[in-house]
Amino acid sequence: ERRARRSSRPLSTAGISRLQEKSHVMPPSDLLRLPVDELRSSRLAELLASIDAADAADAPLLTLLFDKAFGGDAGLQLLRSAAVQEALRATALVHADDAIRSFALVHCKRLAAAAADVSLLGASGVLQQIAVLVSDASLGVSQRAVGFFVACAASAGALRAVLDHAPSRTALLAPCAAAAADPAGGVPALALRTLALFGEIAAIGDAQCAMCEESGALDLALAAWRGSDELVRLNALEVFALLARVPRGLHWLEAHGVVDDLLAQARGAEADGDAPMAEVQLPSVFHCLAELLEAGGDAAVDKALSTGGLLGPLWRQLEPAGGGARDAALAAVRGAACSRRGGILVLREAAGGGA
Image (cartoon, rainbow, N blue to C red):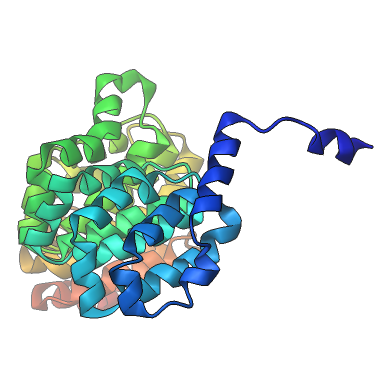
């Protein structure tokens, strides 16, 4: 009886529209049987219309259909066409079904390597929509969008094309801007996604790091680190560890006092936060310092070991009664020993009765 009542409900306007669309569009299963050349030419309009008419049940077949139509060099060229760009922008990337948004992003990523293609995505409005999807409610879709921008950043020219496109840059940085506008409100989860994205981009190279700094995205890392939310501080530490891998990032960390903060926390001189949370953060602090020591050479060793007093806290973690940061402390010792000066200091500490 309940089922009968449910089936007797009138369809919504949207539901009627979707049924009408499906009745006029060849089903994905039938389109999939067609020769690829036909899909790319006389049937292209139907292929693109099938996106809008699709629902969750159609998504697997639609994925296969798009792989067939847009595979190879010929398919890549078709992706650049105005008709396909419009279908991506207006339909696929805003579709109600997560799977359809995801596979659309997979194909967009194929255009992420070249600055010319990224500029094309910007001109068509696709790039801005991908930027919006970094904050998508579906984590899977968000990760696909993040992957697109990381792929762009492999080329400094493609990343520059992203950041020079004002609407896309604004969409990407919108969560950061919201956090900056309300410092008392803390750093929201969506802003942390953006922060992690720019941290990953900055770690690719000095040119990419400079562009991230120029965009203002790294300012959020400082706000997260110096805020009162201890879990958010862990997110900032992850970004600092990424920044420490490139010279420009090391300079940024030093210039903004982050290295001094990390050394102070490693020595147990936390100014804020309760002791249990400081202990939880300690492995991340040591991991960040390990990256810094490995990449920074003798200058980082002098800062952290000779004047920063880091060897003592590291050695205490290596003792049998040490805390839960032993593995991270070992990584920091290894990072220090990567330089000649650091190796000498580590050996002296060990010879003096350390671990």
